[in-house]
Length: 445
Image (tube, rainbow, N blue to C red; front, side, top):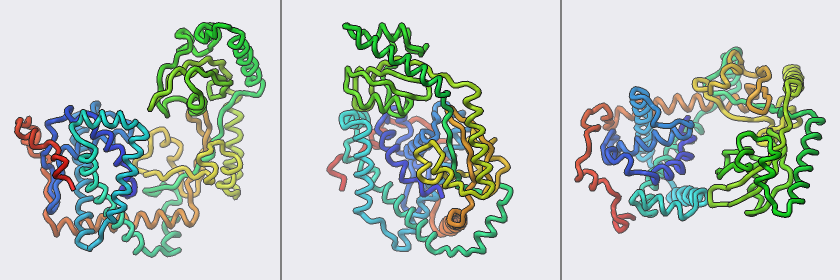
């Protein structure tokens, strides 16, 4: 169920709401759906669209008119379904714990403050014309609704009794094809240069360190222009500019983070080679640095060595060895190796394009052929252990029960969607815009 991921969207929504409400004034206070005594505003729909596209790495500005219409219709249907479930929960006297609502809200706001800083949050709120209290008031109800949705899903899951026969029937049904949801594990081996190549690069970076230490002027810029093997930054004296977390290689970012402004790192090894990093400035949400790079080049023999290793691990897994133990012993992805290679749950109808060629034709228990992404080689296993399959059967059954619950309760309450009404897209009058502004703090609970 998508509901299990819905609470994670709230922190994204908080940031998006605060950015530029003046950019879409015509979207405020237009009712696009009614569910019993609840309404959905066009501004809320627009916000949800931005949240989902941002999560997918897509820009709403690049959607065609037909794509935007399709996405709006799909998301509005999801929002209406959520409200139908909330109304059913209220009818069944299910309540969201008020203290838990406040806890979720506080956690999300504290995360935002840590990520962008209190000063930037205050500036964003000022640009949006809202106070922090008003913003919290707006999202308190949203969090409450989503907690109610989660409780309904949990109660539905608790009532499902899954037998061994159910699990074996599921396994047999998907022996040669992927089920709607699949649990995937991986083994990752990094493609690294041969030891002799690393030794030569390490010796070269040591010579550059000595040159920097001997330079009484400490002219990092001049030495970077002379020795760095990064063609993109060497002409600029090694300047990489300012960067936020997640934009560069993690080893580089961690080394830069550990420096104070004006300090230079020791040699740092990344997939590109060895770096010497000079930190210029450390801000609330980004760092500014220069570097000198000595490349440790990878060749086809390095890739072949990794492919041979992955083929051996694949053969051992298919011969009966435990894939999870092989991942713990050999995978070089620390985030998944400690979990026995457990990677993620995939929706088989929306698998990322780069994965499609490698999982097409696989069934439960199968292991993919080796493939390469960026600096690493991978093999994937479609997990088929009993606990995993029981969870997938339960999730599939709960999804069906929830769809039936929504369909049934939609027929018992007033549900109306108005997205197709042409007047929605007419410009707002000034009075409409002023009416849509946040209520004064005094009006909030």
